[in-house]
Image (tube, rainbow, N blue to C red):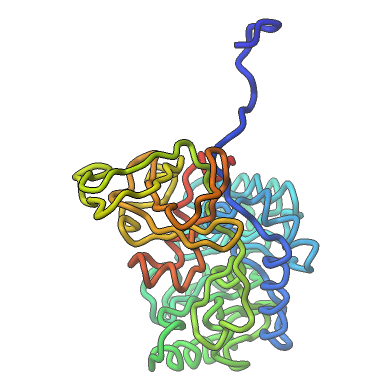
Length: 355
């Protein structure tokens, strides 16, 4: 508490931060927009903009020209509405109950209808503009093709008909099958726009673009298909300050489980980053950090909840308080860690996001 007010300070300098390149995010959206051809390009901003942070991502995406935004949960709407009109926001889970219906009707946010039950619930409350998810083979959310003739679907005022590709990041016959099914179903539905392609789907070609594409991963620096690699830039990386520098004598070990033993005297830095921040134990003995001069510094031993040890023998200039950046190019980091690019983005813990 402060002596003057008796209140806790609102913030305190953090030894953690999530570096963010807004120019890269804008460039990635523009790249996806260009690759989407004649289709308009939206953005999936669910899960706090894939871990980037809505407050970081939304102003950049809006200024870049994005006007359609997709979230998963109703609880995510408020943060997006701070930067974009309600009519530009779709909620993928649809109206789960009366509270969701009431909120959508009062704000103008579009629910994505995923079932006959949701369609009836929406219409019974007075309806309004909505989106409709059609299941073309993923068997997750969505109305099945044989259900589209139900009167509850005919009663909907549909803006966007959506479906979701299950294997767009792979060479799979299911991609063409889903695209064909989706195209064949559209004449059965009164709607304004159609949307099938996610980030990987955009790379599959114009036949998948329809009226609107919905990139997510690619916006934030992920590369779902190799064809997109040259078009995308890294957007974020965890950074941590050195909280202690020590000498690890030859023959001694470091960290939990004593999994690393020094063969010779080593200069070691302890970073204020651990698995509570999303830098998981899978990085133990594998991860790397980079100093501002480009020196690459390997992780030693096990990553713990709050701390990670690295070898800085090759960087004698480093001092306590200096900042280091984790190797977090998403395709390379995914291959090294065994995590998916989606997991790498969304794992960032609250301490890291707040930094």
